[in-house]
View 1 (cartoon, rainbow, N blue to C red):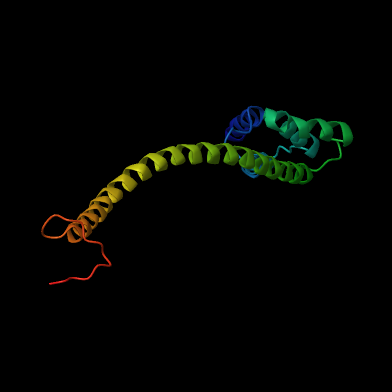
View 2 (view 1 turned 180 degrees about the vertical axis):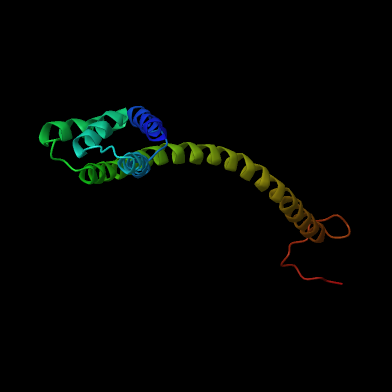
Length: 165
């Protein structure tokens, strides 16, 4: 009775098996093979064709462009589960690379634009904060030079003129 109830549970798990949104093909392969191995240990064998068909039905929409050619071009009855998962794994890597490039470009553009506006605003405040003391220092130097040129009696004294005293 325990064996029959465990087989029923494994059959239910197998029938309801779907790849999760955040799950990789390799992780799905492990889950599928765990169910198949447990069933085999209890005396029920899942043939390759049944496993291949289950995998093809369980894939999300993002794999549709891979599933259709596999179904049309290859004989599913003779296909091995390892072949299918190898092909799907390669396709997933290509899909992930293309998706990463697309989203990285968009993300970098928005981050750069956001950082640029923040940086410009921050830089302008920092530049202003740094510029004010420098401006005051240069203005003070200019005033001191002007005072030296004017002389004690208030008349302008050119810098190349010699002191007659």
